[in-house]
Amino acid sequence: MRKSIFTLALALVALVASAQIKKPELMVIPSDVWCISNGFYTEVDNMGTTVKVPNYKQALQESMGLKLAIAKLNDLMAERQFPLQSLEQTIKNLEQRRMEDNLTMSKAGNELAESPLDEVTRTAKCDIILELSWELKDFGPKHSLSYILEGRDAYTGKAIGAASGTGAPSFTADVDVLLEEAIVANMDNFNNRLLDHFTEMQTIGREISLDIKVFANNEAGIDLETEFDGDELIDIINEWLQVNTVQGRFSMPYASENVANFTQVRIPVYDERGRAIDANGFAKQLTKVLKKDPYNIPSKVLVKGLGRAVIILGEK
Amino acid sequence: MRKILLSLLVVAMCAPVFAGAKKKADKDTNQFRYEIECAGNAIQGTYLVKVWSYSKKAAVAENQCRKNAVHGVIFKGYGGGQGCVSQRPLANNPGVETQYAEYFKSFFADGGEYQKYASLMEGTTEIVKVGKEYKVGTVVSVRKDDLRKALEAAGIVRGLSSGF
Image (cartoon, rainbow over all chains, first blue to last red; front, side, top):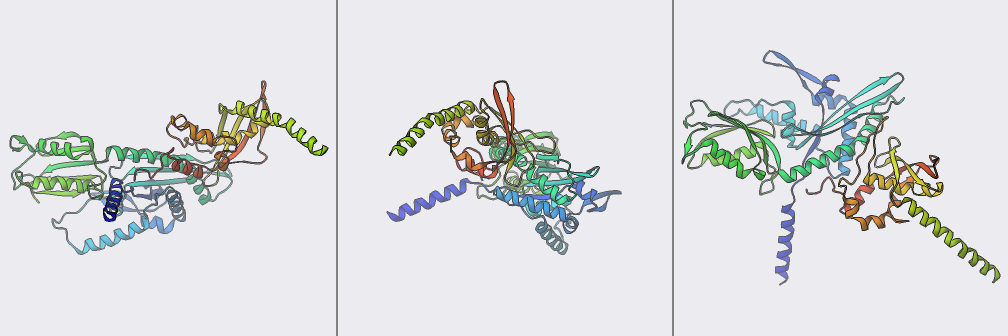
């Protein structure tokens, strides 16, 4: 009898635990505009055009204000039971991964075209990026600090909410003091926006986008209009998305025989085993289905950050 | 013996006066008739607000400022400007006050829990005579983080980590 009660209690605890979903991971990064205006960037030649790319490592090593701001935000978020992921640690992990990547060749010899931000978010596996910028303005002998904290969904890049404002002009020239004041004053408003986003995510899932393409002259000899038991492949994919998205939420703004774009695809935040699903994981679930009978379609998934995946059908 | 009787008589005579004052305070402030505005940047975990309360007696209005400040932070929020940041009310759902009427009745009762979360800033009181009544403004520091935690624990306000 006692054993049965104990087993029942354990089952109840397990049920409660499985009903809860994991907390989203948050990370603060300096915004592109802050990095570039403060000289923390590197110039990259992108097909003949020079592009300024933020250098987060340099910013962390050289800006005390940034370190202070991140520490303060971490302190305030920890108070709300949301400790932030460390950008510094993520960069170290990223460097380690890059080193390993350099030692091993990609199977298809492909390069992943990702921005530094994509790389950072993918390495940290964070859900929300808090982009921070500030600027000190002079009004005669007084100084005022303009501050922006903008939350972005790391999966889609969409803005979640922002807290911004310009502090009262002060004789204090200490940027760190003004920055701390601005963070403390604006944090509640920012957290209110975050709460709205979490409520939406818990209700209608996480948003990603998915592109499906077909290799030209592929070995499998298929395209999106190829029929299986009277249904075109694009309809089969549509049906799969209808079943596997939250409340069947997605839209298909464009489809042809070789390309289909799916946007506003709402995927479950976690799978049945409680693991976080990103666009890559979701796309792989679809490719597994297409690989099996009666379709037998080989495919390749390309990663584009957490919130976008490209499936190329026809070859591995 | 005579002294004791005299003291008792004085106490008995004063009691209705105090009771009357309390009744007056409750009557004047029961509707939570006040204005709330930002009074500057506060230290972490607090809001610094200026509350204007109304009553026919200035002392009554001043006494109610703490209660009104806490009420304002929970249900009204306040506007920004001049370096101040506007703040939304802690209770996002406008129906919360009615839904948890019993809780708030005891919370805002005289000597109620609200007292723990507000303190008057000395030397900041302003009194303005408006018609037949007084408008009294004073700066109050509200411990909003502790207040929010108490409301979250009571299930009145949704915490950032709820549902996770």
